Image (cartoon, rainbow, N blue to C red; front, side):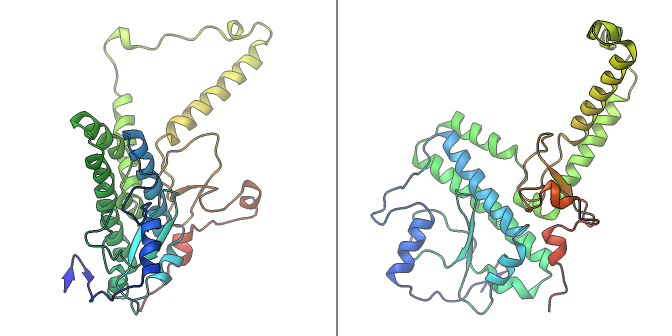
Length: 289
């Protein structure tokens, strides 16, 4: 039987220890009660972001480890994102129905039957659907009203989907958005009220500086502002978060995606000795049988 590209095999009966593990994995106690379950919109969104970041790591920076864990010889496997920003490939819960919605079943059986990038994109799509189902399961369980549900969706919708991060679509959308923004800002403005107010003379900025020093300082500030504007919408290829000028970033010379140094375990000191940087995804790319 095939479901959205995943081949399903009969599930084997699992032992009690396995059942306990999955309950802990999903934050559920064995008596059916919730363990640290989110109850407010902010808590549900925090849970969503933690699980999302874990799934993105599995499909980007940890992709080689994820690939190896999805052995087609094993039983039906699922990819779980955890609130702690970690991920786990494991068997599904025994309980029917499960305490939390379950991820797509049998992702390992499709691994060798398609191109790796297509397989990762397919897992990403199902992971996006699972994240939404978990978030709105909490919303229903704890009685979110229409306003709360709308606020939760808008908070989620402000983040790129896992599929967009994994396939690079998020970066393309940012480039298109930046191009449109630059085009609109370059249009002449006929309304005199919209014209920029001229800056005060350099000497008025700081009377203690001479004219040349004030001019140099102004140029440096403008360069910093331009850099912030240029990269402000750039997303990390690993965690999907926005660019911040106070964090170290590194760009892959192959796919040209940017990453937080901490996400790919690269420090500024180490980066000085790297002539051509390859991100984990590009480093692990090879022909699959």
